[in-house]
Image 1: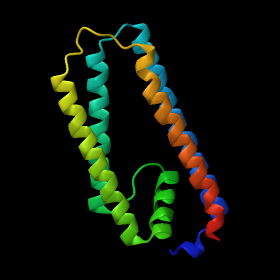
Image 2: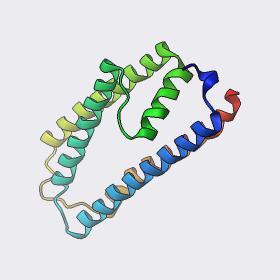
Image 3: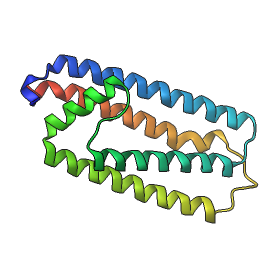
Length: 154
């Protein structure tokens, strides 16, 4: 399906729904993090869990790049299909290569960090969550801007 056959209002609705799903997942992660703060969980455990999540996202990005298949919920699959049509196959592939490389590098760096920095005696504090909150806000703002810019496509 080429881009002209997409209903932009429907795509915007799907992207907003996807943003809500993303925010629910981030809220769950944030609440679990707060529970770790309250339980005085070792920072090393939290970092190990983050490392596992990063590797999951890296492998997932690599799978999408190599298989060129869409994954996730019905909403996510439709948004991915629109993005592929909107960007064109060549640009979509470049974006996916960039995504996979960046996630891979971050995963490797975080893994090295987890195994070389001694955080066993420290516990998770609320201020450790500030980068997470900043990334969450930045991601939301970026998605909102991209959704609102879809009007200029038509």
